[in-house]
Image 1 (cartoon, one colour):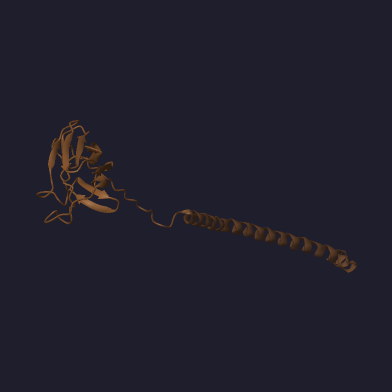
Image 2: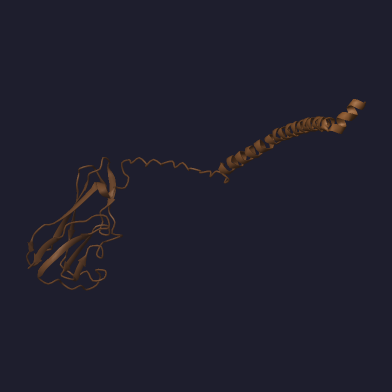
Length: 219
């Protein structure tokens, strides 16, 4: 004991004592720091799934945003069924495109007392026989002189002015229209004025056919 006490009085034992204390304290602080670092590292690992969850959520949100929000449009296509054209048979009405109509005056000049005549020729060029109205109402022969409408076969027609004819393929129908050289007026009734000598034009008026005009003269 006296030896220790003397060392203390010399100051050597006191220094060794605090060195031991400092080393022990440093070791304790190292242990505590190591434990703190371990806890901090462990806490970081625990938080990593949270960051991953956030990333997954963001990716999910981006994928959801990329999907169309509107409902798809449904287009309904209607099927149109073509109705076949009826099959033509003999005796049906003629198609205008299958019929050719021509007219010809019988003379260029008619002497006094002679009645002008026009021949109307109708030909069916179709594959089947067909019917056509060739009467005065359908094929109206008109006589004009300049702007003066002198005569009309429709105005002077007898009956209803219709004449239905069966036209065979390639076999022409020929009809003759005669003008009595009198003005038709409104209805060819009563006293009628006689046409004067001069140049006249004969025309076939039709809603379906176009026929060349004929020019002739009366003496």
